[in-house]
Length: 136
Image 1 (cartoon, rainbow, N blue to C red):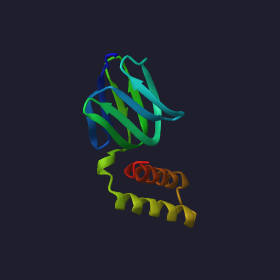
Image 2: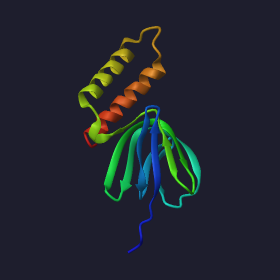
Image 3: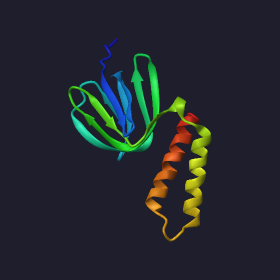
Image 4: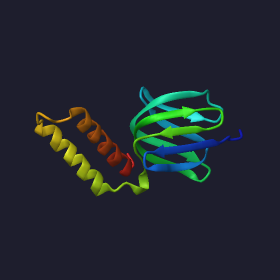
C-alpha cells in the first residue's frame, strides 16, 4: 500500500481564515471544471468558480460551499482565496432558501436598474449552498 502524503492548506475569505490544516487531497471547482491537488502538485494559480470544495484530511472529508476565487499551489502550501467558503454543516438552509427566492424574484422582475450579472451570481451561490447542504 502506498504512503499518503499531506500538505498544508489554508482557506481564506474576506472575513478571515476558514480552514487551516494538513490535508491529503483537495478537489476544487476550477473555471474550466473540477480538478484535484495532491502533495507535490506542480505549482499553479487558477481561477475558481462557485461550487463544491472537497478537502480530504486524516480526520475525514470536509466539504465547503465556495463562491469563486483563486487557488495558489506552491511547493510549500496551497492557499485558496474565496469571497465565501461555508462548511456544509454550517449552511443555514432557511437563509439559503430566502437568498434563492430573492435572486429569482429580482431576475424575474427584470427592472431597468437591475444588475443582471450580480443577480445571476447571487442565484448561483444560493443554488450551490442548497445543493451542498442537501448533500447532492
